[in-house]
Figure 1: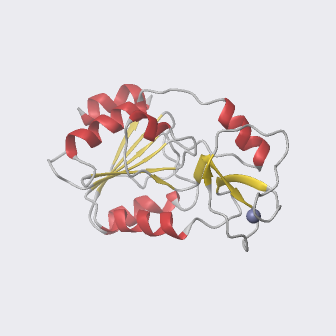
Figure 2: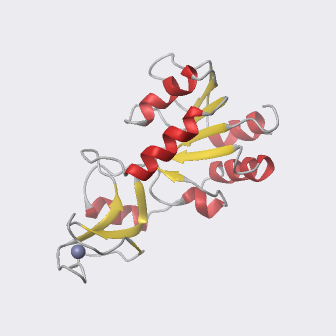
Length: 196
Ligand SMILES: [Zn+2]
């Protein structure tokens, strides 16, 4: 990888398939992997303007490893928001595990984790940020994800359209041959070699 090359990294999918109870289980079961540390080290070396981290994770693993300006496609388990679209309350930091959705302090509607579920739209902010990152990229690396979940499924095609090299790192082979390079194996073993 050449110095200063804009790089976009999309990394592991760990996305809940249904509402608050699954999300709360996620809050209880955070695990550590060396992969976010390797990505954070790359971002420290190249600079955040050269390495953009886009994640399908909702558990803040990359931020805890030291990554900055992480684009969280599907929101964050560390925040809670109101379910009412008319409510004026803002999402707030919250690691509480609830037995049942508590009422919003402003409008009394149920609160929920500030994550995006499968049938919901991405936030306009993360949609715009990810598109901006992919508009100006010359190396795109997909790590630990099959890339089949929308909108990430389209990222490799966007990157290739602007002339980027595309790299796939995962334990399973890519479901399509969309990438220029495929590395099959554990990301935490392969990445230090590939990014070193
Ligand atoms: Zn509310």
